[in-house]
Image (tube, rainbow, N blue to C red; front, side, top):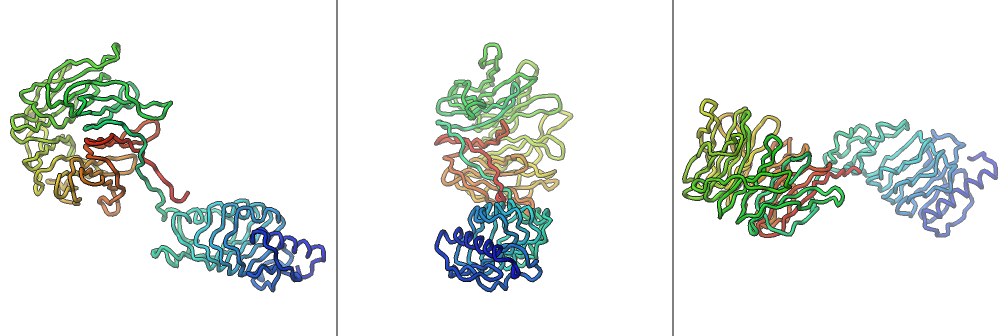
Length: 519
């Protein structure tokens, strides 16, 4: 520009003046005589010796420099009225924010220097519109290499522009690392959370989900009204709605089971006996088809359904002193008593699982250690195998798998709840979680995310997330659920929900939300 004609110098001066007006929010700048390079300083002088421009840059480019200027950010569209600029330089300024589309309207900009400023992060759309950029320099800025900078790492891997080496300042594990050499895979930016989606105005105990007639359904046991409440997804209102009920007395469990496209519901009650209902699709209602023998099932507390080979079963955990935890088998017309397990144990929970490919049951009791039964193919019955050691009076046991490994979550009302891992011949301690009034410790998997949810009657419910590297659960989120009794995952309409029953408050439905921190 030193040899440029007078009209060209006037254009350069006008560009400088216009940009300064935008960046200084209209304050009147001083108007000194403009030399070869137009440089803005902190006293708003438009021109100063521009030694900051690199010597490698061609001398005839239209350029604009800001050195030790007073503005605090580069807002969106700062250079819309200066489309002819080919070079921009920002050196030793105090701004720390560069907005989205800050350089929009500069189709001819080839050189961009942002050196020794106070920038810690750059918005992902900062460089949008720079179609002619061939050189970028971001040296001397204290970049925080977190998820907000992941886009820059991706951009550096795809741009054709030459980019000088830039370095991370934070976090400590990335300090002094070259940003140009980072890969997007080094940034773990996807997080999840549960947020309240819908509230149901009633107390509940058990919650179960089932697939029937090509749709997903939910059934909730309502103890104080004695109802099994059936919910379906309303695709128009985008919420769950009640479509039917089974009315009984002091209902504690409503367990669905679908056999050859026919829906049955086992309704366990504290009073008035327990019953089995069938869904009549022609009458569009539930019809009672069978009573469960009251001499064995006196105080049901949990029901588990399962299939071994081609046969369907369910088992009822009975918590009375005189009752028997009993396995029932489907014979084509109804369910009939197949096997009574131990008496006098006051079982509070039963869990079906497979260990090394073999069917097992784990029975939990308020008076004994959890007991493991294994299926015997010869007798077609469960045989007691062993107790789970070092775990007195577990209220419930639930299992989950990580790859091929089997784990169990054991719930204690007071004391420490546990996570244990199958070691080949016994379950071994892996992790302890403090329990304060806990009656549910439910593992559940949502897509590729493994959680365990520990409820509490006295404090917040704790959600734990499985850390694959540590091979254990870590604290993830707290939920405010009053006296929770069960949690279940429901996937419907490309959405994932968590149902949380409540013995003392409202039943809550949470939505599982995936958040990209790099967005």
